[in-house]
Amino acid sequence: MAETTTLMTIGRFSSLSRLSVRMLRHYDSHGVLVPADIDPASGYRRYAAHQLIDAADIRNLRDVGFGVSAIGILLAARGTPAWTHALRLQHETLVEEQRAAQGRVSLITRLLDHGENTMSITLNRTQVPAMTVVTLRGVVPTYSHEGRLWEKMIPLLASASIPLIGPCGVIEHDDEYTENDVDLSIFVPVAAGTRVDAPLQVIELPARDCLVAEVRGSYDQISAAHDLINARIASEGLSVRSDDSIATKAFTLYLNTPDEVGEEDLLTQVHEPLSPVQGS
Image (cartoon, rainbow, N blue to C red; front, side, top):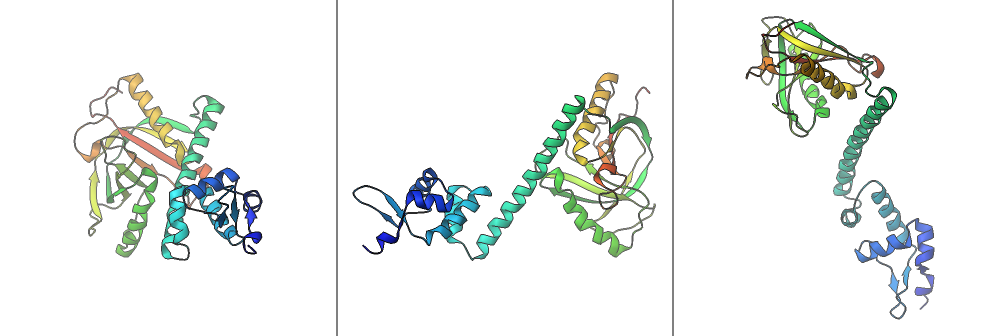
């Protein structure tokens, strides 16, 4: 009896743990935070002081997005590598969600300010000269993971002492827009006759007639750049290239990079190759 008198009512435990009575009952029903004692006659739940530590971990795990089933598993894994691994994976997920949310905020800000803000995007039809480029091709989870390919390519270029002669870029190989498992080739222009070892590859890109949307500012405007290009294609009855060569693929040039300038001064060119025979 002396032991039970030191236990707290569910209300008191709720106040201290910052978990509502409703949630405490929910965690009890799922076996995540079971009361230290339940009165058999009244059904009243009572909690021990040491359970406040569990309650704090449960609240924190809930607040970073774990569901009740995952919380139960993680509580049992505290102090093990599995606990740390799960938290790191959730951190990566939240960072991606934050990046996506910021993109939505930027888009809706542009829509509110201008209806469809194109003030920082200019569109021109340009004859893009032929280029010799060194490429690294790979499949990444999403377009925003392009940086993973650059992390592999830059050391390879440095070890081969390959001089660059122009802005870097990326070619999209997929025939359709895909949200996952994106097939990309990042590239850097090099002098003709450059030789490389696998996984790098030298490609000769031909001269092409392109619609080019130049974006000043953050990369979240890239979709708007594609929209401008598409509107021009529709209004002028233009045709995009559709043969199987790499010359048909849309590509992007980065005229500068985030390690060189602030986000507001980034310059990016989105290119859409047109069919060879087009009216000017």
